[in-house]
Length: 175
Image (tube, rainbow, N blue to C red; front, side, top):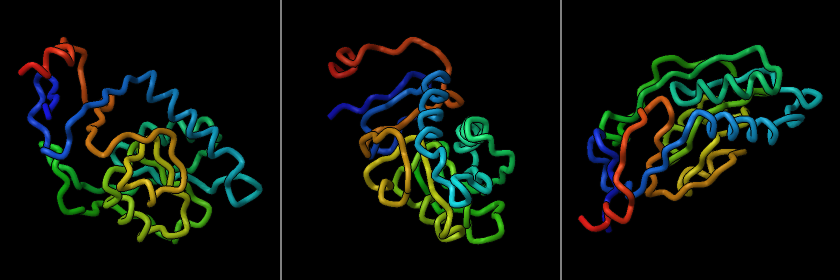
């Protein structure tokens, strides 16, 4: 199996064999689709109390969803878990939130292994967890998601990439 590595990016962990670049337009469209799935689902007359965005990836989707669902109250759970070489390490909580999550939406860009999601679920067990993308290992931890991607895919979000030339897949497989 050939590993696909974009130019200018360090080699990914052996567990990621494919890449999936996401444009700003695609991210906005998919976050809006997530909002459509969440509208009217809140516990208080269909409304949500607020949003807890998981930093950093959940910030942009949370802003889009907050706009679409007319939610003004947004908080964050701040943590680190990935290194610069895309390896997931120990979770370090930098900032938490109070309460058990009743009536709140947790928003993240992606659930991968489910490790971070489980950690946040423990912090806010009664919140509704929603992500744009879900991988098979993390899918059971979230309540709502839009797009499933394979476990061996690394998603490059728009804030992670710059436009540049990349070899066609056929040429990469000849290496």
